[in-house]
Length: 322
Length: 291
Picture 1 (cartoon, rainbow over the protein chains, first blue to last red):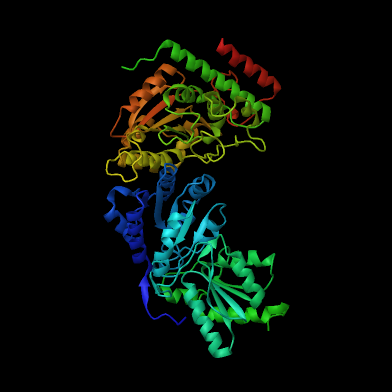
Picture 2: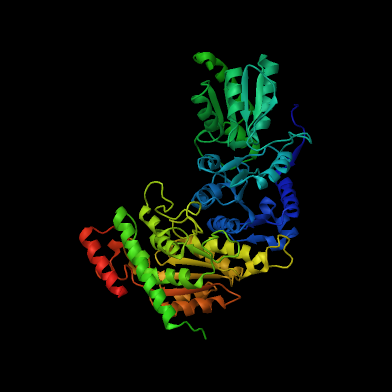
């Protein structure tokens, strides 16, 4: 796979995919905490005004109202900023979606550092940790606009609550029409035998760039795996990579605590203990600034992934880092 | 005018007292559970389950049923007792309350216990969840709807039982605003206003001031009644059902620990089980109330 040349807006694809779902399934309803012009769920509101509910700036009610709709047979898509689901509304999610078993789909907008200029109050860097820890929750992270389009119908059909993590900005186009993801299955998107780079969301593109650089500069053959479903995690694919390449790197737009890196380490630790070097934001709040610059400054650059791969390789087979 | 015969009122009053006896025995047997707020709600719950609700114990998932959402989940012993006595599960099962392998969890679990509409315990959720269900039931009736459930589903109503301590929680008011915005005439809340929460009087812990005015200003139709008077409860629920363009609340003035002299008005009986002496005295008082 070549380095992407074009960029496109994930939320545009999201709004369109939501409208298509609405056309296909009359039970799909959409709720918003008054940010529908940010996340583009307004496109659904325009197409189906009777099936769109703006509950105001009230994220707790957003989730509870969605649960009530789900208990009566609807398939609610609740929309607000990712960090608000993962913090303010988390008790509602735990009690009524996970424990209560409500078939509600949470659309976490502006995730990671993608709401970059609004600053750390609006960045979502702990959402994957929080949502992933809840029994019964499914966590899906699309990597580009095509992935949004392909995964959203599966999210709708998937039983039980799902957290779907969306990026605010234009992101590199990675996939074409042949991309056929399946919730709960990871995908090998680049072959390689020395080390495996496991990426999710926006960082998948950076994993591919890092793999190309490792190959060109150091003749290191890096496998790249996409994990779009953090939970349930594709355990088999990760263990296979651990056994075949003996060194893993994870890369995510999230804290190094509790997200993809933790999920991978949880799987390997008890079954195929190999080095797992985690790339993400290192237990700190970021700051305001341009999106791509923030990723670079806070530990999620291509160079950070390359460095992590070198580190993982040096630890491979129980060696100490050189 | 709504007429409810004296015999009906008497029968429901006796059933309410029976629910209190069930609750006392459940909490005493397991030495765990909440009595005070279950006792204050006994007539309200009895009025719902033995008269007002359109439900079918043989079909707890019947799509056209009325929904009763116990928002003050800690009072679940009285809900379990009502469900059992209404035929949702055997009365003997009440003895398993809060024990291993029981469907009667410490707070209600909608996936385990037949007839339980929402899992609850953390307070404040009932109104907002009720808004969602009321929206869905109303949408089901629209002629344009392609999902096309039968028209009778639209007649199904949503009832939420709230505690007056519970309404400290902000999400209650978020839900109240949404109910008003969407003019949910098919949603009725009943506020079990027993005046006492876990550590003391509601008026001291967090004064909510003029409740009727508050709910009116949030766009709700408001009635105030005596919450242990079954005739008043039945009439108020009928009246609430006739309000079409706005949600309705029945503010029911009750007594925490109602029915047992040493439990009434005492916040210590919020979540404490009785010892043997206390149990025997309480049982005698409650059984005396039955004769």
